Length: 100
Image (cartoon, rainbow, N blue to C red; front, side, top):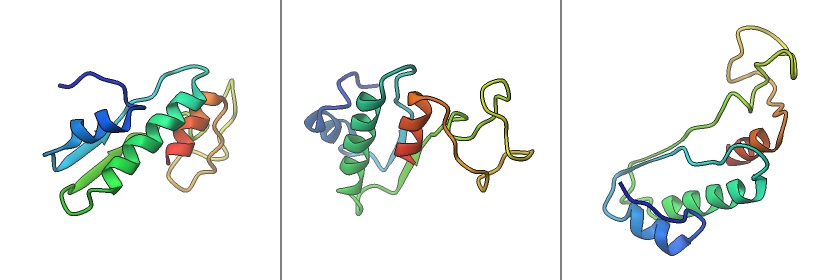
């Protein structure tokens, strides 16, 4: 485990050195859109610059990309799948969609 600032490209480059897979789950809940977008950009750029060494990059999105909470925004149909319209209800959901 490594602790650091995911908006710092030097830190991210160092953290992923020597690995063959990255699972990116990092985002802050709430009104942190700009920070989350910056983290997504730095992490995906670092991984994209290592296409020969990195075998897998997994980005975990969120239920906030797809409306699944009917008291906030109703689904277009059930069950919700990857073809469902993406309609994030807030900044957190929008930052996850931007990561997509």
